[in-house]
Image (cartoon, rainbow, N blue to C red):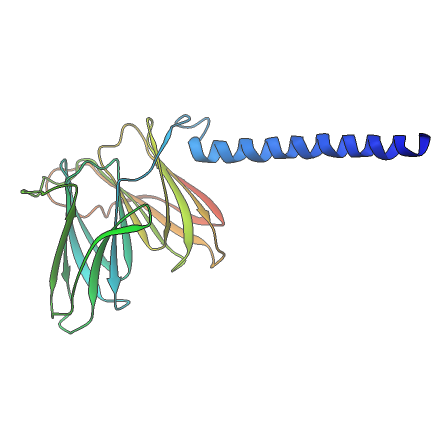
Length: 236
């Protein structure tokens, strides 16, 4: 009996330590999912409503006109690009114009939870593609005001989990860089938390903000962040 006492105590201690470590891990996971404690509060996670994907021949330039029921955005870029409208209100429409006088492919997809809802494409010089979801949007809405965006520019192709939140709600998605988050009608200041699921290099992230009237493209950079595999960016 005495020979079993010490191993039994060691086993009990090991189980207690393991349980404690698991509790710490789960607590950390829960904190990262539910918001940034101590900054804007523990916001409940809500999945993004709409993610658009611009695909085709890598490097082909384009410009996007995106509108939901509340606001619109003009987004210039190059293939590929993912665009997520945070706090989205449907119906939502995206029109892409290819800025290349050639037969390169440009495709648009609407993705919801990893499932492709609709897709259209063009190979025409200066071709135009339009897709929408959540009904029919008859009229492009006025430019977003304020217009707050977060651009996750790299590393190219990096898969990551993004949590973007204001003072009320957090929105989570899993996507790849480059990604543009358009925050519709943010309540208070906005934060972004990004965690790499691969290791392709350091994040390069910009936050832009524009509260002026009239059309604009959200190019006023107010803060940047870099590093990895975990990065936080905060509105000043």
